[in-house]
Length: 95
Length: 483
Image 1 (cartoon, rainbow over the protein chains, first blue to last red):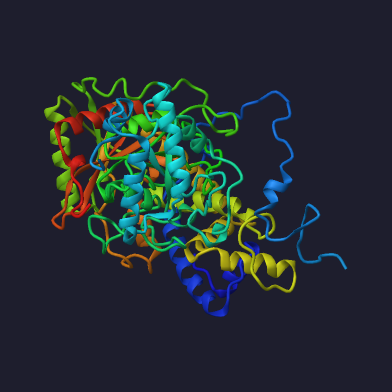
Image 2: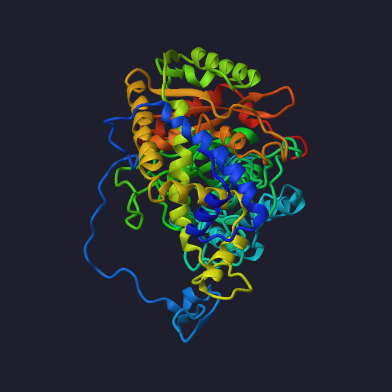
């Protein structure tokens, strides 16, 4: 499977990555090469094999329903690019 | 002082022959005088020396443990309260972690000194440390060569004696491959052994933190601190943690070493192959015997990994949106542009490639062909190991198909770079523990690592097997010239 510039544009859109005209060609080429490597998977018949999502396949543990996290908003918002009155600021999305 | 092992330094500190303050100062000075290696991203002298003084006070009152006062270099992927934690990325270049990772908490509780935060491939995606936003790390054995990656800064720091020991993380070989390329000892524990809490996520079903030092004994001392159940990591495994130093000296007579024929075929450098064979002969002299085994699906490990790891990464890295922390692009017209410009400018090329591969593999219409297929192969690869371990106690082979390579030699071809991890990746897919120990050098004086793979939660045996070899050989004692 090889990707063209339109494919890269579509994937970049899904991934929220801005890609300029020049980069489109370079990404189409390197991503196609990586997909070429990945497609070696098709040499093996995996019919009837159960997918494995986790090395230990252990179920998630349960804990008592107790409060373990407390409000540390001021501490965490020190790292935020833009805040006001305890709120994260982003460009306006509703007219 | 910098020639001493962690075990020796521990004795000297507990006997009050040296103070942690003296020791920390000596290492801080070595880091300063070898800045050309670019092994560290952040060093906070004042904080390190304060921690050393606190350790000395603890040692004076007899309340020290085995690692109290020992300076440790931490990979810059572990969140460290009040210190920059960058993950080698522009995206987090200004991020000051508001809390400590579990691994950092454990080293603090043991009384260790945080010497500095080490350089790494961006978001741990790389095998050469060339993808770091903070520039490549140089290999102290040959400064024209890479130290391996992604834990390249930790590996170079330990090899150059800028730190007695360090931490790394290993998603596809990122502890073992740089350990091999810099001639040190590194261990990737079983998945679930070391908490991932506060360890910045790359591929969560594969990521595992572990120790890097010069000897198996030192690695055992560090693992004693790092390993253990943590309820804040939902994949942390609640099972007893042995004292990993206790069984180091046990006899390995009768040990069955599985040699997978797939690890000695095409693609392996002849020089590396010869050194690995010599190491196996040494093991036979120590009473071990060799079993011929096969991991028939191991050739599928790289294709399988390059679906699963990017898929998990594309999901994990979706959090970097310029809203709550990290980089935000300076100019944008609307929310959409803020996201896409922030991510385009904040991430480097290799990270963007992997995000796009992962996004593609998970996108509508492609999920079954890529992600599901890779998950099925993961089961086949894991099943190979289960069968082989019915006939042997450990598996051995090369850690990396070649020795350290020159800067720029693989940066234009991501596929060539990915093949550096051909012998390490399947271990992560299966979740098994694996080590790399120094076993010799090539004709250019570049180190070669022997990989030892064990059964689930059999780290104690790996360390025992590695230690016995290091008692009989001195490869792990060699230092690069000028360090």
